[in-house]
Amino acid sequence: MDFIFDYISVNTYWTILLIIHGLCAVALLGALTHQAAAVLMPVRQAAGAFAERFRAVNSAAYATAICVLWVLTFLMGAWIYVKYRVYVRLPIERAGFWKTLGAFEMKEHLATIGLLLLPAYWLFWKNAKSPEYECYRKWLTVILATLCWFNFLVGHSVNNVR
Image 1 (tube, rainbow, N blue to C red):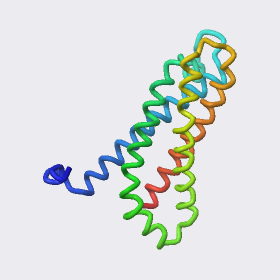
Image 2: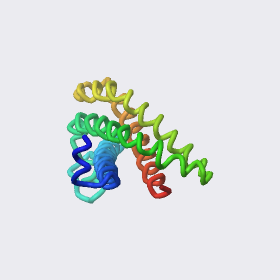
Image 3: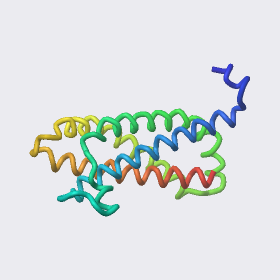
Image 4: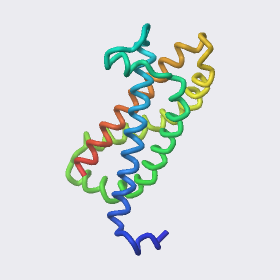
């Protein structure tokens, strides 16, 4: 792996990883937001206005992409966490930004909870035609969307503090 540093600097490498992590997070956020809007406020007629078109998506089609994006974003975040733990967290601790650190700790836990919810989420969306699972699909989607929004905002804030 050290051969890559013959071509780019270490800081550039970690910056690229952070950007990829952020892009995966934005894609995940968009997919979950679309799906959550569609299950919370389903469109009853042909979509006309922007808000109706935003909600008029095939919710089941997003499930696999959301699972893959969550896992990919989680793994990228875990990889970056090694660098964060040593080079970012320590200066933030020294500066006394305890609320920022606490929010990031919460982000880690919520990302893991979301990861653990994915098998149930995928199973219920795999059977999207079954009306008896509609409530489970709806609330798992809303929970994952809420977790994703929280994690995105906290991650963005910590990056700005850095």
